[in-house]
Amino acid sequence: MPFLRRWLSALLLLIGPPAYGADMPGPWVELTSDGGLDVRSITAPGMDCPKVVADGTTLTNSTRGKPNGDFLVQVCIAHTAAATRGITVDGLPVPVLPGDIKRIVVIGDTGCRRKGTLVQDCNSPTRWPFAVVARLAAARRPDLIIHVGDYHYRESPCPTDKPGCAGSPYGDNWAVWQKDFFDPAAPLLAAAPWVLVRGNHELCSRGGHGWFRLLDPHPETDGCAETTSPYALRIGALNLLLFDSADADDATADPTKVTFYREQLQTLLAHAPANAWLLTHRPIWALAQFPGVAPGTTLNATEQAAIRDLVPAGLDMVLSGHVHDFTSYTFGPSRPAQLVVGEGGDTNDAITQPDNPGIAIDGLKIRRTLAIPDYGYVVLHRVSQGWTGTVYGLADQVLARCRLHGREISCRSTGR
Image 1 (tube, helix red, strand yellow):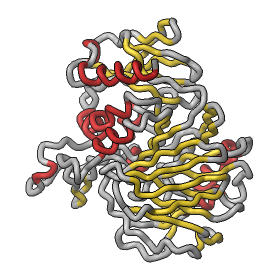
Image 2 (cartoon, rainbow, N blue to C red):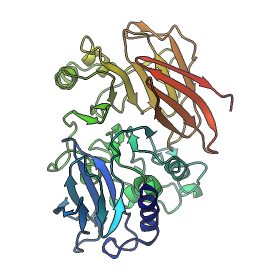
Image 3 (cartoon, rainbow, N blue to C red):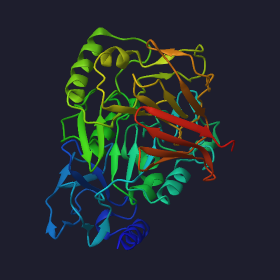
Image 4 (cartoon, rainbow, N blue to C red):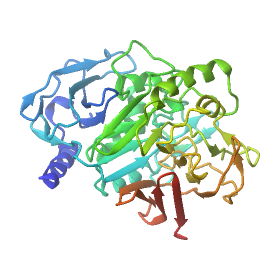
């Protein structure tokens, strides 16, 4: 039956039910801030929302955001419990959560970079390979997909002397969100439910209006907000703590922001269960690996100040993106491991700092680290004690293998 559901979902992506319109993406399922599931779909204005049935009951399908000049679409949302065992959209099945999450695909920083003089070839599957990443990752048959943020990147028009992005849209509008995320992500959207983390590219001054209309897992809000409330997800034995760090400053710790984030983190972490993971776009304890930064420059000043003395014993790992590579950090038993998965498609401009241990981040030295600049994705697989992780490249080759047990993460390059 699971195989049949996946096959039918893939077929849905190819043919599309009539209610969506010829160029609309298929439906997707995402976890929401109340711990439930949203079945979301996009239709042309004025068209009926599709019929969504969960465990034999027809769900109410409401709309989110009114169509306007930037978003000439309507978003249909049907909400149900996370424990729902079967969901259909216009008679065709969509993914649900299994009772036990054993295989997780992690991706991040997936859009095509276009801002001022920073121009990526959006029309090239090798220079902007998110579609390749999504297709390969979907073939791993994940139980869950985690996107650690930064979906929207096309902020400026394509320069006339750059044929690699000719004809590509820009701005915070449906045309960009469709090209930057929904079209290339289609195989993954049909593969499993998603956990979605907001990135700094989804700030209100960038792609935030599309984020709140299309993907934000909170109840609908008016307009766009720079911050959202943290929340916890318990999916079987998997404990995820979601924290919106989109507006945090990397280099400075503004006292007002530190106070605000500290209050949020106190609430989020006060009752953290054992073996929990904190999901936040900006890494808390990581090296800045951007062109022009001095060796040893670290991230994120705001979060480091806000979380100081609040880290509970049960927090094993911080899972982030923001830096456009794969990097693992182990600090020993007194601090959670930090995993960065930001190699999903945006220009891989990360400059790998020395990956030898000994560099101090917020007063604690790195014991073990591995950085890989290649495009790709990560698969986390539950084992008897902890998790294993596999880093894959664009040829679906294994770039590194990792083992996460408690706060210890050990990654070894395969030499690729």
